[in-house]
Each structure stands twice: as C-alpha cells, then as structure tokens.
Length: 212
Length: 212
Image 1 (cartoon, rainbow over the protein chains, first blue to last red):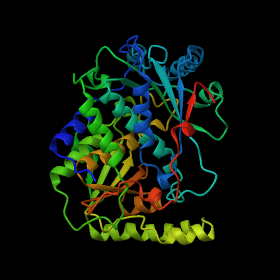
Image 2: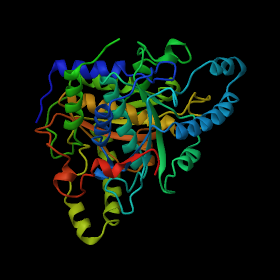
Image 3: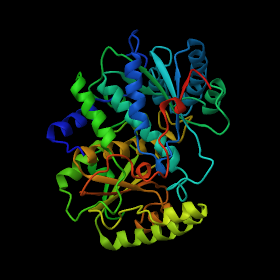
Image 4: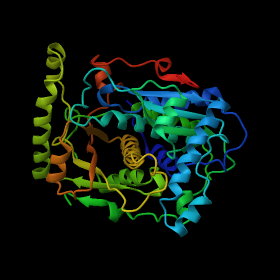
C-alpha cells in the first residue's frame, strides 16, 4: 500500500494545474507513440466505475476520411451555436478555434456501453454509469498532460451523427470526443480565461457549509 | 510551462492505480485537516469545464444530524436495490458495506448549477455541463488519494431527497455524494474485483480501431 508524500502531492497538483484544453492552433505535426497511447488508455481503464462495471469503450481514430466526416458535424453544429450568442459575443465566438479534429495526431471517441443486467450502485442513479466514463476521460487527460501531450475535448458535435460515422451500435452513448497530439506549448492559464470570455470563480462562490 | 518527466508520469500512474472507492469499514476516527480539505477542493475547481463555466458547487457536510438524514435515504434506496438482483447475488449484495456516510470524517455533496445564459461548447451536448462536475470529482478523488485520504462515492441515494435535506435550490442537480476520511488501509485492488463481484475487462475488449 503506497503512502504518498508531499513531493507526490506537489507533482499531482502541478499536473492538475498545467492541464489545458488544447485546440487545433497548438497541435504540431508529430506522431504520438503507441506506448504513450497505451499509457493514456491504461489511465482510463483504471478510473473508478460504478459497481466495477467498467462501462467504457474507446474508438481510436487515425483515419483522415473518418476525421473529415466528424469535422463536417462540427461545422454544422458550430454554425448553429453562433446563433445562440448575442451579437458582440457571437463575433468573439466566431474568432475562436474550438477543435483540433484534423490538426491533432489522433482522435479518441469515448462511449458508454450500458450493461444488460443490474449494476451495483446504479439502481437509484442510473447516470452513475455515464459518470464512470467521464472519470476515465479525466484520468486520460491528466496522463496525457504528464506525458506532455495535449488533449482537447470537442463537444460541439451531433452525437448521433458521430455514432453513425463510427458505426456504433444503437445502445452506445457518445460521452466525449477527444483530440490528442504533441503541442508547441501549453498555455499557463485556460484560453477562455486569458481571452476574458469567462471569469474564474472564487472558492467562496462555490463552497457551502452543511446546507444551502 | 512545465515539462513533466518519467518520474512524474510514474507518480501519477501510481496515484491513479492506488485510488480506491472507500466504504465505512475502512474509515478511522480521525479528523481531516482544513488544509487538506482545501487542497482537495482546489483540485476540484481546477478541473476542465465546458466553456470555462465552472458549474460546480460543493456542500461540505460535517453535521451529524444532516448525515443521519442522508443515511436514511441510503437505507431506503438500498432496500429497493437488493430486490433488483437474483437470489444468490442479492444475498452477496446484502453482505456488502456500500457507504461510509457517518463513519467518515466529512461528506461533500457535489452539485451542478446550470448557467442562465448560453455556454460555449454546451450548445450541442447539454450534458457537457454535468460532465465538467464529474471531472472535478475525479480530480478531488486523485488528490485525496495523494493525501492518503480515502474517498467513497455513494450513488445509492435518492437525489431529490438529498436536495431537500440540503435545501438545494430547485435548479441544482446532485452529481456525486462523497464520503472522506483517513483509513486504516487502502486495498491493493478494487473491493468488488477482490470479492469477484465483477471481472476486470481486458484492454482489447474496450478498444476499437477507427470504427466499430
């Protein structure tokens, strides 16, 4: 049983603080080693899962043909998205680079596969299965950062179109679509914070004692 | 910009592999220092969030009165849960200790607070907001483990009852209910794997190349 020390804590904290959402403007043209992809997947499958159900599936996408199709879905959804913001914000939105589907070295589509029998811990909160898959993605994100590999999560996609493109069985649910690759740099703070799109919340704004 | 090395990667991997879901049978009667609670919350608020929306709220629960009420909801939901398993599995289920609501030093209820305006990246996949909160929980879980503090996620609860007990505003959504405390030991492998409740999946079972 490992007992971690203050150095270990500091390293984890540094990885957590240095992790960024990486878009196409930062990816460089360099392959990701198979060994590194395996380390990232290994971090994923060692995430917590409700009732040890491990309800995740990872589609590793290197095919340019498939990625171009996914990117079409991004373009469609992004056009719709712009219309939801007020004029000044919509202009600002249009200038943002929000994905790196084709600029990255590879994409990983992460799916939830529901169980065909009752799962321990999922009987009252069905959504705990999907949450397990998100925990896997966060583990992968941190491991990618420790490997100095950038990862960006693209959520401006039609999940049903992605399922069709990837020929996913009907019961699967797309949880995250990830772009991975080496980068020229990691920003020191989140890009949307740097650009003043949103302000950072103070801890006192989000912590409540005992009850609301 | 930090460049991590092989030692850092090994430490993150060890934290990921050593993280356990901790239940009431492992918590010991010892307070968690405020400084450690702050480190855990700091890890949470530095998780990725869609459009840098930071849609999380953390209710820190030390009150025994509140925890006893939460535990009542666990008992009710757990009785219902047992009935969902077949006889032999239901007997096995009944012997499992599945939460540590009152045995732990403190509980943290983690909520999703929806935004009242459009959020960048949440226009096509609304659920990305909730997923951000799950990423925060996974960061907290890893930081707790690095601090040698146990964390258990209790999902056998009625989220609406928890909301009522904690007087949460109507728009909030309970994502995770966490129990934290010092432990006598961390198991070397997940308890449900050790007890042969579920088998570990091989990587080949969950990795797909390019498309299904």
